[in-house]
Amino acid sequence: MLSKSKLKLIKSLKNKKSRESLNLFVVEGLKGIVEVNNSSFDILFTVVSNKTFNDNKSYLPSENIVILEEEEIKKISNLKKNKVGLSVVKSKTNIYSNVKINGILLALDSINDPGNFGTIIRNADWFGVKNIICSKNTVDLYNPKTIQSSMGSFTRVNVFYENLSSIFEDSPLKIYGTSSKIKESLNPRSIKEGIILFGSESNGIRDNLKKHVDGWLCVDGNGGAESLNVSVSSGIILDKIMND
Image (cartoon, rainbow, N blue to C red):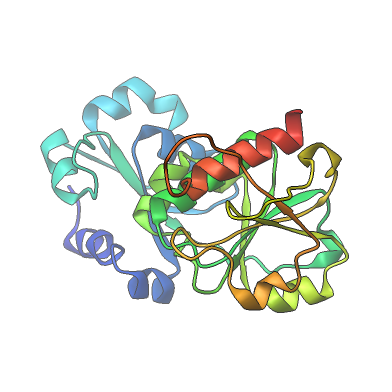
């Protein structure tokens, strides 16, 4: 049985202020539970259905598990079809340091959509990018939609929230901006290390950050769409850099 205090806690973590004040967030679904259990994150407690527990016991946390019926799981979940369960997890605060950073990094300026953000994290994980630096107004990493769309990749990618202008001023790495409006794009194959900067879905990279850009990258299109989704763009550009 789930106590009233745990139920209240789970519901409160839908709110960003609660997540920040308590330093907790929720991971939903079997893949998320398993991924976070295999990571360096600390799990406060896990709630799973009886079927999930019986079928996946060896992959689940060995402590602090509450077993409920599937219908009870559905009532406490943020997801419409979650009958598996969830974990309440302690959040981390990463501090960026140029001394420890090299290779390819991503920088995100004012990304608002949590689904896009989660997919970018997943793309980074796929291509072996370990670090993402976000402007302070980028959507919360621990937003339930961000966590869900990252499909567990948030456990393997470091996410920092910093003043991007200050980071760029001090960075020994070159900054590569991305835009669909530029006419001359660098050859992605030439980039061996650096920070790849993506702007917001609606406005692109802010003017105060453009002055730091050493070169530009774009994804050429032949159709009539006005723009390309930022998460799709990140995947294409990373593929060009890493695999071409």
